[in-house]
Image (tube, rainbow, N blue to C red):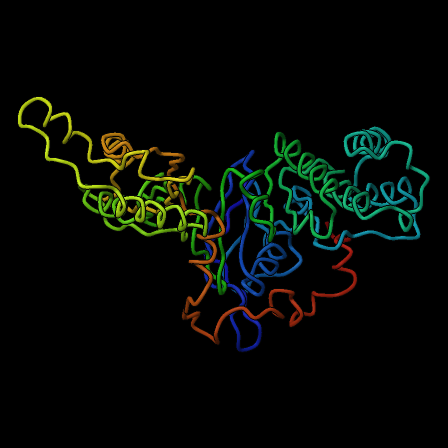
Length: 394
């Protein structure tokens, strides 16, 4: 559906986007991530025909944006970060205006406008002036103009920006429904939104695509180590020593100090042990084996009703080994109760920060895309007309 090949964009002596390559299949919802100034908006404006690339090519469903710009744009619906609305118009008159701009045949306009109004929950507001709509409904209007001509590709720039939680849920549901019949490129700073909506993620930094993959596979592609977070009841130092002694354990890191109550319990246990009289050594034989069998701390060690401490640790494996069974059996053998055990994965936030923080990329010209170039402020194409999101040549 979308082919971006070796696309670059230069702004005077700076390279906003550097030789990016990616494609999108029909029916995909692809999240497009990057820090401010990374080149997201520049890339989306080139895809939608609002900016011309300095180098490279863009094709929509096989149609070159350079050779067949009008036909290619007809296959695109674009929602900029600020919805392209005329506040003095009513909902109905604005959609009629967009239908005319999009060359929707007159005999189909009434049907299409009605379908879009129903799909986006705008019924009963047809005569309302856009200026009086809430921000959530203005976002719906922005989506309405983007899908009115039933495009194959939707490009959505921060569609939930500035909305309240209820409005965010509603817009996400609309995007999910649109993804059933459209290919969607979604730019957002809300990383959980990517996990919720997208089946693929592109991360751009300093004008380059630095990662491309399914959200669930990104950590593995970065060589993530296998880690287990663990909560165990028992003596802290003994637990740490036992975990470090397991095969294929690379490191054991305490996650938090025990609370004061737990520390007090440990001190109480130590004092109780010091006050206990020495006992005669057990006789040899069966009784001796039973007495030696477990190496665990006895419950009566913690006196005065004190609870044994809870130890929280992060255990990292060597060679991506799955340590959960070994940990379970060893703690069970020692009679240290496991309260929680969970395999940890790099979150999308962790991956994003790894790829976009303190990373230096030689873009060939300058230091990469600045925040101003991402907003296309260096380009004469960045005008009020373009901010309306409706290209009269589309």
